[in-house]
Length: 173
Image 1: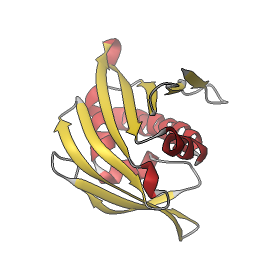
Image 2: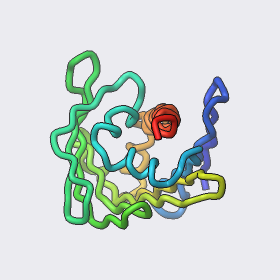
Image 3: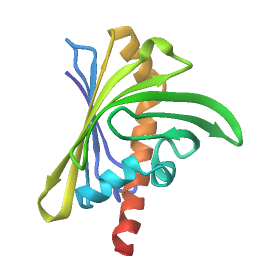
Image 4: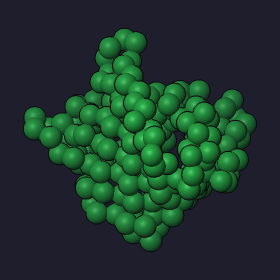
């Protein structure tokens, strides 16, 4: 299994594990957060919070639809310097509050790389949370395209921003 462990340069944020299985076209991402599961969950389902952390630092997000419930959907546009650079969408298949989200993830600019994603929110001791995401794509070529599209940068920078957002949410409690 191909595994990438990353650590923020400033060492302020924990590392993220990104694994590409050599036998199955999947990507598994694991990250722990120093925040309760309910806050990590909120940051994934509330659109005003999602906009503050998701994706690389150089990209903004315009949300068209954000309905994260069983049977819901989402659609958003990534922007850079006010210009549209990518369009993402998906159907929400299952939501088990504070525990799991199952959704598709599509990228209009790479239609062959639609994935089925499952996000697990694990409550850990001391008010911490481990997020595990498993993405399954149709074939290895589609997965290679996802990985080559800058996914690792977006995941790492996004989760670093999520750490910062969660710290602020905890302080506001």
